[in-house]
Structure formats: C-alpha cells, structure tokens
Length: 432
Image (tube, rainbow, N blue to C red; front, side, top):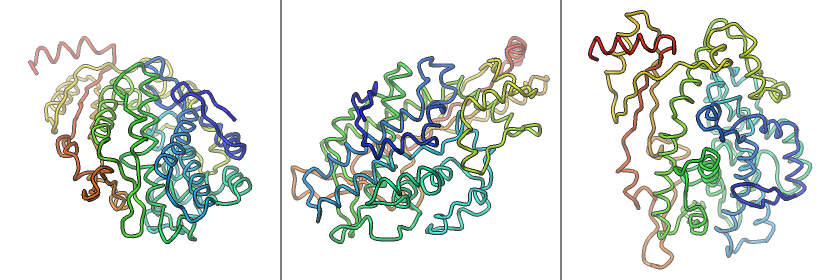
C-alpha cells in the first residue's frame, strides 16, 4: 500500500505491515494527537500519532538500507528479517500512548494490572514491581499480547512479537539468537535506530511537528544524516555510527530539537493546559481512570477524555473544556533555579490570588543522564576517508554536549484571567 505523506512523500507498506496498521489497536492512534494541547497555540498542529508512527517506520527502513547497503550478511534472509523487525518496532514504538499528553499517565493503573508476561523475561524484573504503568508498558502489552501481537505472529513467519518488543524495550531478554548473524549481535544498532540520540523517531517528529506548527526550529538535514549513518562493530556487537563529515549535521539536529522544546513543546499555552489537566487528574473528585484491560484501553483516546472533561463539574476540567485557561503573569528564563518565582507565588497567594507555578526544564541531551541500558549502547563517529582514524564515542567527537550541558529553565506564573489585573497591581505595588 502506498501512503501519501506530507513530510516524506510516497511511503510504501507491505500487505503484512498494512494488516498491523489496520488493527483497531493501531487505528486508535488516529484519535491521539501528536502534540496534545499544542493546537491551541499552533492551529495547524492537529496531526496525530498514527501519521507520525507511519513516518517513523518508513525512516527506519531508509536508515537500515543506508547503513547496510553493501553489508555482507551471511544470508539474504538475515537482512530481510532484521530490516522487518526494526520497521515494525519503529512503526509500533508509540502504539500505547495515552490520551492528549503524558499527563494522562497519572491515572494509569499499576503495571502489575496489565499482566505483561514478557516482563518476566526482563533483565530487571524488579523495576516493574509496585509502580504506575506508563505508555511504554501499554506499548509492550499491545505488541506482545493483543491483536497486534497475533497479527505479527500470523503474518511474519521469520519473527515473533517478542523480537519487536526487544527493540522497543532494551531491558527485555531475547529468548533466542534472532539478532545474531555470523557471530555478531545486531540488536544494539537496531534498538538505537528506534531510540537513541540519533533515532528515526526524533527525525520524524522534528520535521513533522515543525511542518504542522509552521515553524523553522525543527528543520534538520535529514537526508545527509541518513546518508551518513553507518555501523561500528565493538566487542561482538554492532553499534550505530555516523560518518565524521555529518557531525555538524548531528550538532544541528540536537540544537533543533532543543529549540523545539523551548519554543514549541514548552509554549506557555500548552503548558498551562497540561497543568490544569494535572490538577484535575490528581483531584479527589477525578473520575477518569485509564483501564488495565488492553481491549478496553483501545477505546480511550483524546476525544473520550475531552468528552469526559466537558461532562464533569470539576473547575479544572471545565476550564479545559470551555477554553478558559489561566493566563501567564510572569515568565522567567534561567539556567539555574531561581527563587524569585517561588517568592512571587507566595506574595500572590498571601493576597488570596490562586497561582499556578510551572517550571519547564530543557537540556540539549539526556546522553549523560541516560539509563544504564542506553549508556551501554554507544554511538560512534568514524571517518570513511581516514583509515587510521579510530572510531570514537560521539560525545568525545563533538563539543556540543559540553557546550550545552546546562539546563534551560522557564518558570511561569499563571493566574485566572479574572484575577489578572489585580495580580499585576499587587506585583507593581510590591515592586517585585
């Protein structure tokens, strides 16, 4: 099947892949917006996670082909099965996402309620005990124990749902040698294509979000990066690598993502809607709970949450439903914690003005604070024109990580529109 995508042009998916796309579980993503409340700031940002995921699966195939275009696999079948596995993992990486935004994860059940059997094969089973589930847990449940899993099992004879899950969740233990070929383990590089500092997920959402928001912040040299992605063998494991000539494009890729967070994802209007949703979901009278049953969960999408918010009397739910958000009174940009925001909040609340203080923190990269599983999978830089130049980890090959190591913090104080003039006068009189 050919899909006409506004960002990537014509995208092709096989009949077996279309069978996955056509499941009710996957179609649910059409009703989950990619950017949650961002459409209230950027009216064009109404694209959904279905379209995004279809683009990510497409880019995964392009990246695999670029990296292994002349690679000598033991058999052609090895190339086919590994390419198919990473395409499916990329296609399904977001399938468990909750309504509207990550905020809805506040009302997800304990992970034990999902009964995710493959977690028994996790390298760290204890991390799945006594914690609240998140969208990644629902993703693994969908992939391994739903109609999506059954479709994979029936339509792809060379792989199983667990192989796809292993590329989405790095802590899962692969039960066989699926990712091995000629004594080389290809799981690291395929996992990195799905999730890393240089993954196809980011490549798609930066270009796509930029396109639909009408901004230039997320523009990247995608074709050059893809053309220069390669592989590096280290200790029997194949890792993702980048040709040195594309290192500046990688730097720009990270900076573009950083700016998208500061200018789009952290837009003041998106933030206040998420804060109000947070207040409702954590209130004592909240009656919106996401179910543990995966079949029931499939009916939960953005529209269901919006309908619910409009139907309850909670003041925060009603503000969201009626589009009456709190308004920014003060906005502070810093690179360190600023006590001034808390001081202003205390002054306003002492005068009886309810205030929401939202602090948005952005870093260029999570590379240095990543999980042990991610830190163990290095991305390397190689030089195709200098045979004597040794491959080096990417954080040792560019200064971008150290130059942007600091955190950028945006503190905002919001008040109800009806209290805005009074709050402004209080701050003026107090000379804050």
